Image (cartoon, rainbow, N blue to C red; front, side, top):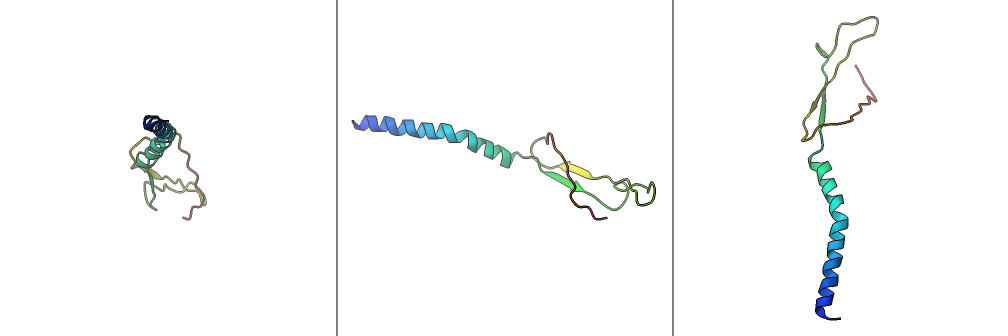
Length: 84
């Protein structure tokens, strides 16, 4: 084998590695840089809390703002703990 053959083999292997790794890296960059960043605000005053409808019943609203670089699609909110 000549030096030219080894160069062809090396370049082919490098291109194959780049072809396999490039989609993973581009998806990782998309998720980190362009991810939506949701901020939740809440205050113990109007308009976040409405008048009591009965004993221990309140209308509670949360303010949600997207400060990220892309639209937040198919989001689901789960409140695990809430202390009032």
